[in-house]
Image 1 (cartoon, rainbow over the protein chains, first blue to last red):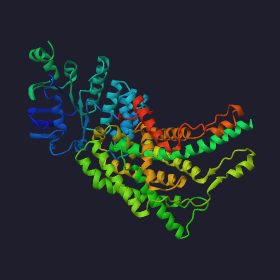
Image 2: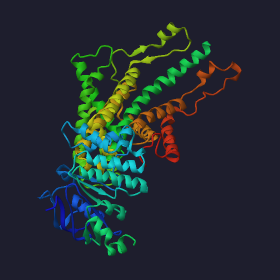
Image 3: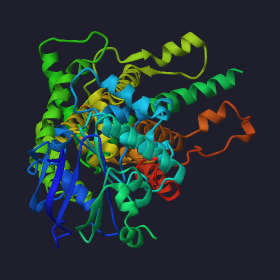
Amino acid sequence: MSYLIGENMVGGYGGADILHACTIAVEKGEIAVIVGPNGAGKSTAMKAVFGMLNLRSGAVRLDGRDIGALSPQERVRAGMGFVPQTGNVFRSLTVEENLEMGAFIRDDDEVRETMDQVFALFPVLAEKRRQPAGELSGGQRQQVAVGRALMTRPKVLMLDEPTAGVSPIVMDELFDKIVEVARTGIAILMVEQNARQALAIADRGYVLVQGRNRFTDTGEALLANPEVRRSFLGG
Amino acid sequence: MENILNALVILANFIIVPGLAYGAQLALGALGVTMIYAVLRFSNFAHGDLMAFGAMLVILTTWAMQGWGVSFGPLPTALLALPFGIIGAIGLVLLSDRMVYRFYREKKSSPVTFVIASVGLMFIYNALTRFFIGTEDIRFEDGERFIIRAAEFRAMTGLAEPLALRTSQVITVVVAVAVVAAVFWFLQKTRTGKAMRAYSDNEDLALLSGIDPKRVVMITWMIAAALATIAGTLYGLDKSFRPFNFFLLLLPIFASAIVGGIGQPFGAIAGGFVVAFSEVSITYAYRRFLSHLLPEEWMPSGLVQLLSTDYKFAVSFVILVLVLLVRPNGIFKGREI
C-alpha cells in the first residue's frame, strides 16, 4: 500500500483521453520520477494525481484515504504540495512574502520556524529575502517555488519539471536539494525532461508512453535497462 | 528680488496649490480604479459615478447633521459625515458585485464584458444620484473657508501678489496623504493586503496557496468604494458638487492610472499629480506671471495661455495617447493594456 497512489487513472481535458489506466505511486521519503517522450502525458498524470483534471475511472489515494473527490485546494490542505512548471512564484512579492503566502492556510504559530527551515535548505533565499521573486535568476526562482510549497509542511511534494530552463550546474544543485527534502520524510513525485539525471536520484521511475505505463522500476534499474536506454535516454 | 517673489507667489497661488489639491483628488480616484483593475482585471467605468454617489450620501448626511446642529468647528461637517457615505458606497458596490459582476465572474467572461457591465452600472449610479439630489451645483463646504486669505497674505508679506489657501485644499492634501499611507500600509504589511497582492500577481498560484478569492474581491471593492467616496467628497468640497462633473472626471482618472502604470498603486498616485499639474499648467494664462519678470517692452500682447480652460480635458486625452504610444506600461511598469 503506497502512501500516495493514482491507480489505473483514465481521463483527459474533456476531449479524447490522455491517460489510459496509468498508475503512479510514491512512498514517504522516496523520490518517484515520471519520464517519457513529449506528449506521453507525464504532466497530465501528475495533474490527475493533484485533482486538476477529472478522471473517468481510477482512484487517487493519500495514506489509504480516497481523495478523488477533493479539489486541488483541498488536497493542499490534506498535505499535498504542488509546484507548477510555470508561474510558480509571485513575481512582484518578495521572497519572504512568497513564503508567507505559501503558509496562508496555516493558522498555527510555527510559520517562522518553517520559514527558517526553508532558509536553511536554500541559504541563497535568506540572503535575498527582501527582493521581489521576479528579479531572481531562474534557479533561485525555482528554489522560491519549492520553498513556497514546503511552507504548508506537506507530506507529498509534487514538482512539474523543476529544472526546465535552468543551466546544468543549477540543475544538479536543485536535484541535490530535492534529495535533501526527501530525506526529511517527504514523498516526492516529479516530472522531468532531464530523464537521465532525474532517474539517477529516483527511488522509483515511471516511463510513460502515450498515457500508459511502459516501464516501472527503480531508477537504477531503468538506467541499466538497455531498452529504456535505447528508446528514451538516447543510448 | 521682489519681482521674482511676486512671480513665485503667482505660481503657488494658481498652479502649485490648486495642482496639489486636484492631483490628490485624482490620485485617490485613480488608486481605486487601479486596485479594481489589479484584482478584478477590468476598467471600472462606474468609478466616477461611484464617487458622485458616495459624495451625495456625504452631503445628505452633512445636511442632516447641520439640521441637528452638529458641527466640526472650523472644519467642514462633511468630514464627520464621511464614514456614513463610505458605508453606503460600500453597500452599493457589494450589492452591484453580488447582482452583476459575480455572475460574469462565475461565467469567466472576458474583461470587455465586465467593462460594458460597469458602463451599465455607471448609468444606474448616475440615475440614483440625480434622483436623490438633483443635477444642480451644490456647495456644502462649511466651517472656516480660508486658512490664509488673499488680503491677509498681502498685509503679512507686503507683496503685491496674493496667495490664498483654502481649508478644503489643505484638507484634501492632508486626507489624501493619510489615506494613501493607510492603503499602502495595508497592502504591504497585513496578511490580507499581501494576499490581495498575491492574488493580483498570480491568480492560479494564489488559489493553490489557499487564498480565498471571494474575500479578496470583497475587500478590494470595499477599499475602492471608500477611496471613491473620499475622493468624491474632497473634490466636491474643493470645487462644487455636480453629478455630471464626476462623469467627466473619469477621463483624467483613467489617464492618471494608465500614466502611472495600471495595476500599480504607486503609479496611480504619481499619475494623478502628473495629469493634474499638466492640466493646470497648460491651461493657465502666464501673462501676469511674466509681467513681474520681463521688462515692459518685452511683454507679449496675448494671455500667454497654451490652451483655453475649456479644453482642459483634452490634456488628459493627449497624455493618454502619448503614454499608450511611447510607454504603454506607464511610468511604473503596470500591466499590458
